[in-house]
Length: 172
Picture 1 (cartoon, one colour):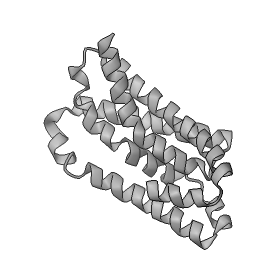
Picture 2: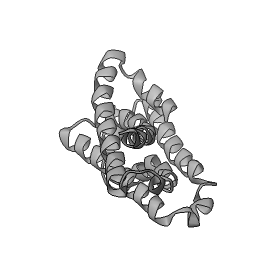
Picture 3: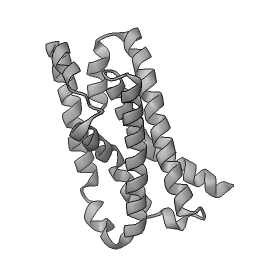
Picture 4: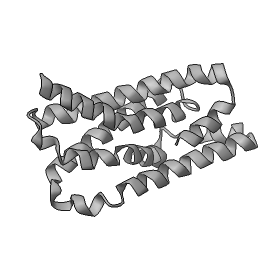
């Protein structure tokens, strides 16, 4: 039972980025389809990258761990800066035309929030939980965290108003 708790704590830690980005994206995109797409893809990418990390092992970890945080930083900072800029300019029409839950934007966000799962995946075989359960748990927790964040973001936006987009951009 303790082993499952360790896997759950790891999954929650890895889902923190997904939660933050999900909340930011949820300010602009709230249809059921968008909620599903982003939640599903964040969970999927978390699982796949954790699995890739576990399978790759420490062989290639030293190549990636030096700059994985910079890749995520660059992608999330760019999105945050774009949100702040558009919020300050008041480009409501332009923002609504860019759906962050589709295409390359979604893939880029999915990779950015999941890149740490690759490094964490290296340690998964050391847990006394099967790899399938660990990877599945990581994906489900990330997907649920993203969904909750996107749903909560809509309510917070209604409460705080337009300034929330600036706050979300700063968080990213």
